[in-house]
Length: 584
Image 1 (tube, one colour):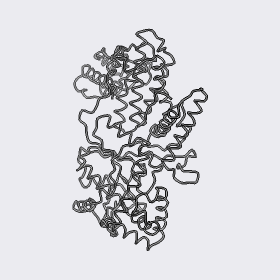
Image 2 (spheres, helix red, strand yellow; image 1 turned 180 degrees about the horizontal axis):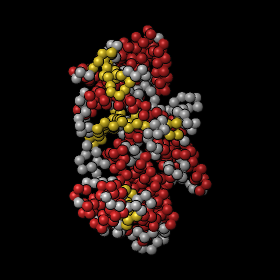
Image 3 (cartoon, helix red, strand yellow; image 1 turned 45 degrees about the vertical axis):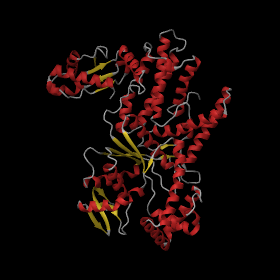
Image 4 (cartoon, one colour; image 1 turned 30 degrees about the horizontal axis):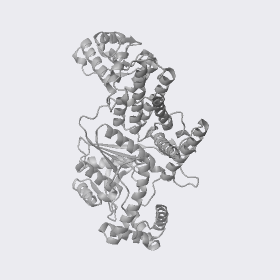
């Protein structure tokens, strides 16, 4: 809730008590943004909910509250409408004062957390010896945006990359490479990542069909877990090679992460099983050690266990996740742990969260959050794949977006008969292409699937990154045309006269509310919706109000509105991981 709405809520609560007594202290005044701007900016709907309790008509209750309501510093006199709504319209002078107050504030009026808390965002999480593909896109982009928003709010954020760097797949791959490409186990970069992925597939096929090879692979896992020098050296080479490939993607996307793979928690796994045993939660089932869960059943309707140690003594994802959860609470001192993964893993998180709670490992002041997201679909509505049916490599997807942005820009420059350097064209294409991919993902409600379309995401019209980058560049076009340095405007009084100025001003002052809601609900699409609406309101203002040609003091006032809009767009887009451009 933004500062204005908070103040009005307090005033309505005080008026409610003054009109009807202390029994109503703490009653929610149901203060919400007005459903129709022509009736005002906010409406309090509390009168309707109190009619039965007070034995009065809602309009009479609303009238009594309005008589005691002092909002003269913020609003015009309250108006009663319909069956008992209290409509409140913000004063122009109040809006002007608010805008004047945030001009000098680099945070644009958004307060930082008074008591920062440790928050962990677990996202991206690719697997070693595999290339990052389209399936990693959403976790990486959504996780980064959530981390950026929490960091901006002043929280102490640890960005963790829980990479798959341990387990059976390594025994399988190392055993296969010993046979077909032993140099890869002793020499750095003997294979490129594409060849490594191809060999991994062949190793998997062999593992699934050859029992003797399965045993050889398992022995390699045992050697790895025991720290055998040659196997450990081979494992480190494979991890390092994959890590370099991941870093290329992370640099393209401007993503910062601390890697802490599954191997990090390996020494803690036996302790997890021992402690679950001590707490009386472990049950042996067909040789495996399990915890039976409430609310989870198999197809036959029987209770479904979470296996924490397999019958052969090995551990699995659940054991590692329980170990990592304990470490994050006990060692990292996290108060909120956020896991950004696809919705298909929802049951897994519900299960191991339940086990951790049953074991008493989750203090009351620690919050666990699974942030699920839907699938990326092709334009045929099916899982996004290449024409040959393969999973789309993330590097190829990003390169294609930049390439298309490059082509679009060159076409536009030819139409406009503009000459630009190749350096300029390449940089604009890079920013537009990467931003388009990020924004197309983040602007969807993350819980939904969405259709990946280069044409739609690169469109200069509509709710896209290029549209907003263009609005930002348009504002800087005004500064170039008028030879204006926004930083030198100083603290000049904003004067709001035209209806589009008022609409833009009101929207600029909602930034704190939007960021606060995303911090709580972890839905970045709300920030996208706000920035898109802000861009539209700026364009309406730009189309209807002369800026450089206006007389003073209106000219400077409108330049301040331009500057505040540009700064809000830049800040909001940066929280989505998107760069801005002063020229396109």
